[in-house]
Length: 457
Picture (tube, rainbow, N blue to C red):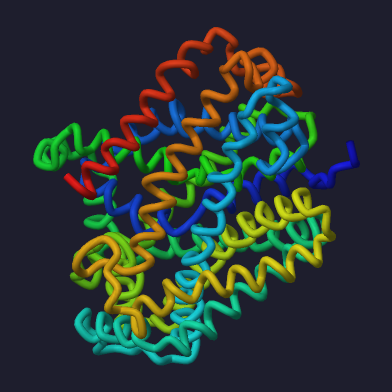
């Protein structure tokens, strides 16, 4: 087997793998649903699911990667029992990364646009939510501006990946992730000085059984389970590729706990930035894209020093989004290098063209092709792509991988636990076989079913 590139430091691996997990959902979903479903009570429920579902699934992807030293294009061929057909599943797993990247670069471009706008002083006092909402609508209606922003972040991300694991991923992405954490901590500490800090944090984290009962305990469970699952980006192989680049000095359960911890830290601290700011300026926090491009835009525009704080906030968001872009691009590049036996630069060039082409439908779906409603009235092409990846490929991919590591014809339980427990650190008990064999697949199946019921029920 050819020598595999490796990260030169553990910190580099942890920050870059965490960067793959840390994404927009950490900011525009987690803080909102935490406040909605009982504050600290919800956080406790979420942490239970994170440790019981998210972390185990992280170890599965990392173990498949480290044991095979190959991307999902070749990993199952190496780990399966000879003569079996597990490897055929790669043909529906691989498209998942392309579907995700077909619209994630577009959203990342929005972050760049708002960051530049704040730096240039385009948003100032007197901006209302109505005006901010119209500004965002105008952006969606302008395909040229969106194309320029999307192209910029895509070019930069592919350029970093083109430099390789050491010179690109580690030496560039590691400082970016450190900057992301520094920016977030800086903004969180600054929130203490805001008038609405106490009220905002009380809404965010104060245990609230009344609010939990109002929303429904089962709904809170589904929300916590879904957040714990989707926040770590498991199920499509984008985490698996980093398992191929990590050494065996530490157990994979230790690494998974660190990655999940960093991801959760970012999600929690985002609430310390958002809620005090919203309550200080009498703006009710929303969920989804409107939280960033309407609510937070309005808040920062009317805040003293808002030009600086708004630019800082969207710079943080831009780095968070680009960290995911870079990570998934690396997975795509590695897959093509292995399948077609081509160089990294050739793979980068080909995939840049492919990504730009498949990104056009969701971009044009907000303007030129806005008459297309693939999932019913009001839906966009991006909604369909999000449904394919979030409600299908991610849960089905995770389900497949869990079954694969416990099946006698797959990787097999002993080989999986041996890989996970190689090195220093926290170890996974082999006695958890039936948990991985029965309970985890059942939880994933429930998530899959609930997702469909929420959309089509």
